[in-house]
Structure formats: structure tokens, C-alpha cells
Image (cartoon, rainbow, N blue to C red; front, side, top):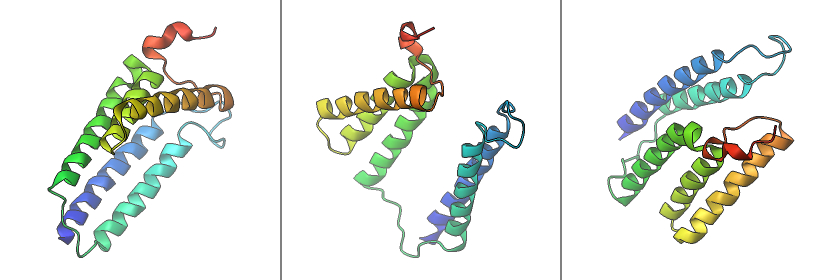
Amino acid sequence: MTFNDRIFGVLMIVLAVAYGWAATQFPEPFGGAESVGPDTFPKLLAVVLALSSLYLIVRPDPDNAWPWNRTGIELIIAVVVLLLYALLLQPLGFIISTTLAVGTLCWRMGAPPMNAYITGAVSGVVVYFLFSFALDLALPLGLLSFLEMN
């Protein structure tokens, strides 16, 4: 079933190109083209994804069958959760979206629902404060915008 790996590799190369192109659309950083800006990390991820995808195309796993059982369904659920996360990030804000996404993924991996969503909430708050205060990067607050400090 090397065909599955090759199809996946081609799809991931398309994603890498789209992701890399989107990173080039970010505004020019203040320090000029030589400084590290908001596009540096996405461009690096796009290159790593493209190289990994090429490896999948050239050297696919010879014994890789698509999981059409429960594992396949869980993978589809995870992709849907991540797509919804991306769509809801701006309107709901980082903390609420992250709570829902991480909580749902933890729950699907077997954690009790209460523990899963507590983990999601703690993750959302910790990462929000890390980005906002330690890295000085703004994340959307969405519904919690009343908490913004001016």
C-alpha cells in the first residue's frame, strides 16, 4: 500500500507550498529583510514539511495500510477538530478555541471529559500568557476581549 504514502506525500507538498506562500504574505518586519520576523518560523516549517513529504514519496512504507477501523475515524475527527480550531480562533479567541480543541482531542484519546477540558483550559491560559507576556506576541482574545489591558 505504498500508494497511500505517495498520495499523502503529494498532498503534504501542496500544503507546504501553500503554507510557505502564505508566510511570504506577512508584512515586512520593522528591522528590514535581514531580521527574524513573523514569517521565519512558518517558512522553516514549510521547508521541513516539503522535505518530509518528498521522503514519503520517494521511500514510502511498503506495509502501510490505511486504517479503516476506529483509528481511521479518530484521525478524521482530529482533522475536523483542528479545522474547526482554525476557523474559530479569531471569533472565539485563543483561550476558548484552545480549550475546546485540546479538550476534545484529549477526550478522544481516552481522558475523562472533565479532566480533558480542564487540561484544555490550562493549556489555553498558559500558552496565551506565555505568548503575550514572555514572547510579547498578540493572540486573539475573541469573546474574552473585555480582558484586554490597554
